[in-house]
Length: 234
Image 1 (cartoon, rainbow, N blue to C red):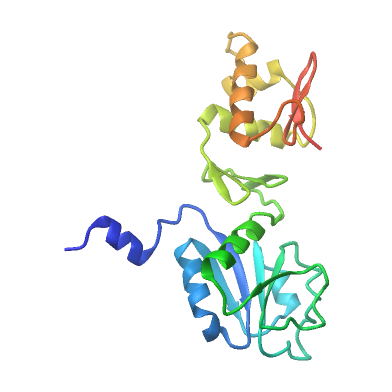
Image 2: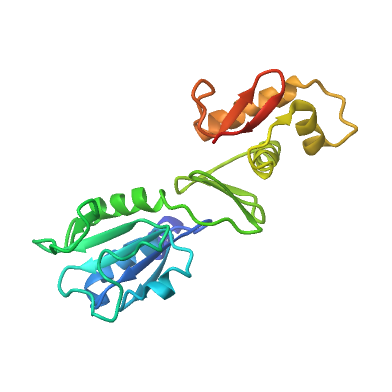
């Protein structure tokens, strides 16, 4: 009888959140080990034979992987460096010699290659994508707040917040850079009947900053407006 650990290794981790990776390859079977590894790591992998930019630009994508190991893209498809309409980063898989027409500053990885190294590159690049917000989602730089699922993802990793911290972050993001006083924040979090001291907001802000990795002396996410309250950073 197999243990839970053995079964988990066979079927992969439970996917609480996923990131979408699109693979464009004329020979996707050659990339099967990489595709299988990404799927096991909770990536939502879509495979296309051709790089049709009109289709790709309509998809919410965290990373595009373009296979340039053998053949160039066909003339009717997107040019190798023509992914300008995408907001996601692009990783080119190359053979022993990279094609001369790739952008000079492009991200590249050798294939076939060492899976751990390539997966590390994928994780780094997928965490840098910036997707447009939706009615159920708020964005602040590399932080994504899912209002339906009440989850917060930063740089591809989930951050565990208390309900108060989540509500506080949501209120700040929904103000769209506007300053919220401590009194306004208290009312949004606990209603008009709350009579606690305003320093309770400062305590929760401090905890929220710590979990976000935000330095109050050089804030990237939450800015203190002295004598008033807080706002999101530019």
